[in-house]
Image (cartoon, rainbow, N blue to C red; front, side, top):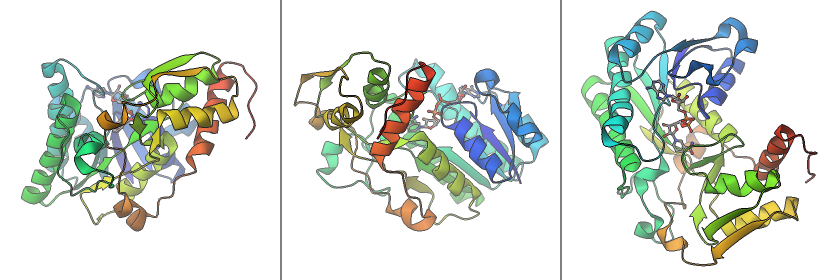
Length: 311
Ligand SMILES: NC(=O)c1ccc[n+]([C@@H]2O[C@H](COP(=O)([O-])OP(=O)(O)OC[C@H]3O[C@@H](n4cnc5c(N)ncnc54)[C@H](O)[C@@H]3O)[C@@H](O)[C@H]2O)c1
């Protein structure tokens, strides 16, 4: 089938496209930065075009021409941006995808929400957060994701569409440069032989490897009628201090330091996440996080021309 991936040359998107191609799908990727990833080895299975999701005409044109059976939107501003700039991409861009799909008769749309919608873990105590819990995310990125979820539900309710959101946790991988990066730098900088320092050893994160989240997006996208409209990805709850210990296990000379041992946990975002919906319906199983840390270390070392480290 033909699948339209918007924002497909980004960190997650380029992996999603490769997994879809492995499953024999035909993919059209629209991105404002089409040269950021190359799919030449996949031949005619992947077509990359330049387009701006904030321009309804661009989205409508590619949707009309492609006649996709599914649309995946991964384009977004990660981090904090001027309000007008962020609204154009995060709110208008997302709505352009939903509306163009509706007008072109594409019932299946998948989009990326985020664990950020839930806000800080302290609101929930020491229990995992479900998709039904109240959302406390209060900064720009979180509020925009919350509105995206509302908008998707509104389209589903009013037009009978099947728009599904995935809330990735803290995605990690060797080439992650936007969004939450402290847990990434805690691995990649020592892998390069560089020192790295963080404010708090007890700051909590919930990393999930980019290959795992790409597989999640593919499974959700390829299902005709998922049981739910929103899914938590979940991941591995871990403190930066414990992550540093894993890294030191592979790289004994790693220079990772913390200003303070405590003080970061209470201000940590949501890190205990209930992903039973996803696991039970889609059978996803993530590779052990320690193996992913080693994978990232060796990918970075290969880029730097350094020898791999062994498990
Ligand atoms: N990476 C994470 O840790 C993480 C965690 C939770 C949720 N998410 C969500 O997953 C999605 C993908 O994240 P990512 O890490 O791959 O981000 P990314 O920034 O690497 O990729 C986003 C892509 O969107 C494209 N894009 C930006 N503006 C565009 C525009 N106007 N028109 C068309 N394309 C445009 C970019 O060129 C880029 O290729 C985002 O919605 C993000 O909020 C990511």
